[in-house]
Length: 478
Ligand SMILES: Cc1cc2nc3c(=O)[nH]c(=O)nc-3n(C[C@H](O)[C@H](O)[C@H](O)COP(=O)(O)OP(=O)(O)OC[C@H]3O[C@@H](n4cnc5c(N)ncnc54)[C@H](O)[C@@H]3O)c2cc1C
Image (spheres, rainbow, N blue to C red):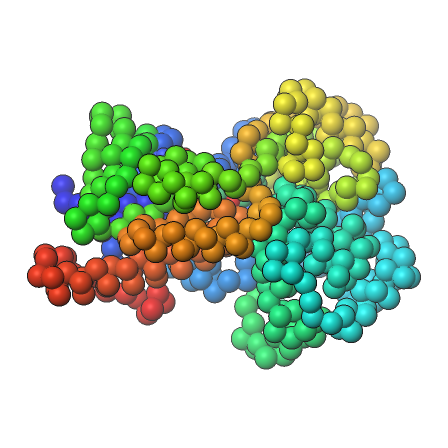
């Protein structure tokens, strides 16, 4: 069998997306995945009329690359959209009660979430001068621009919930790159966002929240079925080294040890696994990767008879600010967001326990995680019965934390990668953890691979070495 153009190590959504874009460019790709299935963290469970997700449960998209991939794979047809306003209401816990998050200026002015001083501070944002250090934290950035109340009641729960991170430690440049860029360019988030909206009127990408009828595994299954991509299951990459005109990968497969060569290598494994593979080659790069922290996260899915919950569940769910002292960071009302995920007459609630805010939850038993979820939910939602079904998904290394001087760390990693032509890092510790960002980064990685292939062909023709032709690049990758 001939060597592939590219080996992708890691069959999570990062690796699958990179492979998909590479296949569109005509590259032959081989994916090595140590598990027996593709998808990595993403996995969908279906049982007795319920559908639960091990990790990502939905996508929020505004990137054209994602729309392009969904259209090309036919996945846009099978999407199920989250409800639109007013059913897409989100809540925050405030003083032990659920308070709607204002979605419009009028609602913000009337909202009980912020004091009058907090609202005036928020509205004064355009008057705040540019500033901030390069390694400013999320908390420092938000307090400086929008005030402490916005940090505590809006940004902190968002960073602690969906990102499982800590705004006091997370890098503003890495976690809020779009907001930081708005300040840098326009001097104000409010003015910058308005100018952008005005400039992009008519062409602005639509923000959509959705999943798929068969859950998020529909996406990873479709990517895995891409023509031109070969999938090696239960194949663990153990050693890599540069070889003549490319890379050599040694690993363990069900049939025994295996060595494969390819002109380019994409590592789409979590940072500790990438560190282990790279340390023998480049101690510095291995050290930078090894220093990336991960938070543990436990997902508790609880199913109830609908009549057991007094709250109308009229929205997507709620986030919990740290000041409330609850062990949950948030709860998604899955059966309200996607009614097909629970049988008629039942309610499915998905709770998130742990993250950087409650690191000790890593060691809690399943029973303690369920008790913690129930103790938080009962008073907030008026729950009058025990759950009828419970599923638990534990992630000991759930999400990478973009903590500390993260932008500097990534810059140093880019610098070191220059010494290793044909080697690329593409996983959720770089460029965003969301599935949207993983697909967009897959596109960027494929573009870099293509450039690198073109360069190696040029140098091969100069040195007289044999090198296969570079595959044609579709316009979308150019
Ligand atoms: C609880 C939770 C909820 C989330 N919710 C959302 C959400 O609602 N929306 C959203 O957009 N995002 C969400 N995310 C984020 C998103 O799911 C992840 O960031 C994304 O799935 C990570 O993909 P990845 O490919 O980078 O990593 P992974 O999925 O971890 O894939 C890495 C793969 O590499 C393999 N591997 C490791 N070492 C080797 C080796 N040596 N050889 C071969 N293979 C190897 C692993 O087996 C794994 O399959 C959530 C994440 C979590 C944990």
